[in-house]
Figure 1: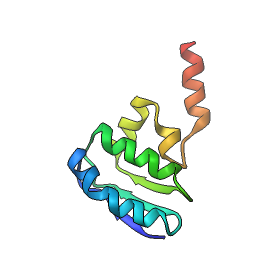
Figure 2 (figure 1 turned 135 degrees about the vertical axis):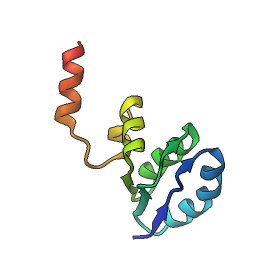
Figure 3 (figure 1 turned 120 degrees about the vertical axis):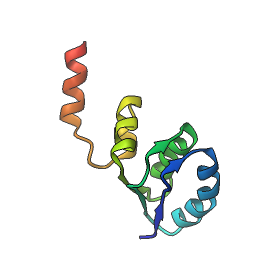
Figure 4 (figure 1 turned 60 degrees about the vertical axis):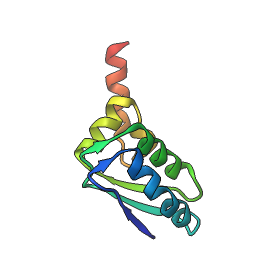
Amino acid sequence: MPTISLPPRCDRAAAEALLPEMIAALGSGPLAIDARACTQIGQVMLQVLVSARRTGEGAHIDASPTLRDTARRLGLEAELFDDTDTANVSGGRGARA
């Protein structure tokens, strides 16, 4: 499984720079994305990550606390991560209803 490492700052420029590499890697099976160094993430990179998860055999994302927190706040945990605790997520929603 090929691995792509994300930089600490995952802005539009980083997304544009990594996109060709991700597209090529996704054509050869599942992709591993190392996002443990990510300390800042923008909308464009989030869109690229969601697309990578949905394309071909998908992608596994090893996320930093910053990426996990941003995904949680935006409701993207289930979209981006394999290990989302769905019982905890649905319990939180039920408490607000």
